[in-house]
Length: 232
Image (cartoon, rainbow, N blue to C red):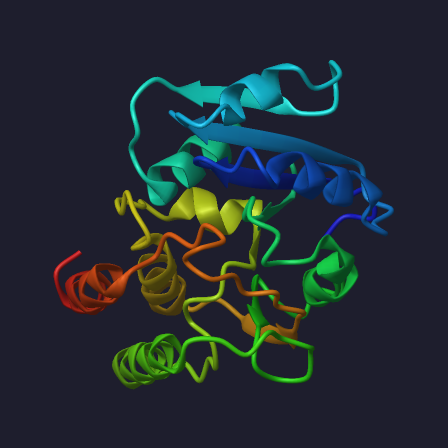
């Protein structure tokens, strides 16, 4: 990784008017010395998120607008296609993940130890205790992913994933919704990437607080793991 490496933070957003400003402020304050760009992709929000983003000071973010709702994976693809940084970091817009963890997420790549870094919500960092069945589903899907790919990741569904730019450019990503997580995990394994995990903070939220993922996405993740391991 060159000494003058740059960072692109890609933030997919859908109906996060309550939190998106705070997330961007925290990204701007993150203790990272790399030059950075913040690419926000609004996935056709209907709750005022778009207006909040359009009112932000010029130059703070690069705002890309989807005119129809396409899903988190599609928003990530749009942001990645526009990213110019040597390193690309995916940041959710819901305050579940803390930009104070950027230094530990970036370190393995900057030290040329990793091509891809996953956060780990359940090992070493403080995390909110919520939803046993979500945890059990995540563990099961992670175990299946490891079995089929030969990886040994602990938290496949984690939202914090960081990539060398050239790695993402070598992948053809197709998932539109939350299938991005299993798809990209399977595909970086097939590419033979060096994958690291680091402990992160996790402030999970309830459905009353705006959580969007459901059991249907868990079933879809199972389909995606098998599809992208054997048929794509």
